[in-house]
Image: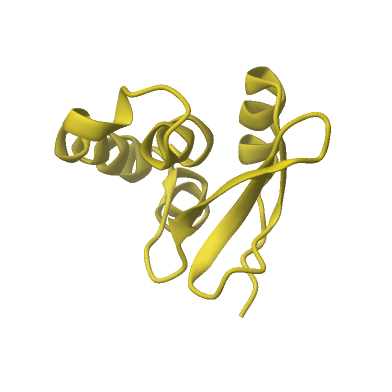
Length: 93
């Protein structure tokens, strides 16, 4: 099952100056590439929802609550720039 990348994630990727595509890695949502096309990493476990998915399924209010909890839960890792956690935080949340 391939993950459908939402416009939200494309906008976030553009802001960061990276290119995203559906992942070819089993169990991941998105592959991230730099502007030259060099692979950087894969992010997002296919078994879990993300901010745009929560908005689509449950509405913005619930998604905002899930986002807040995600950021608290991942605070230790999501602030280290150019790591998987940082990209996941910036693009999926």
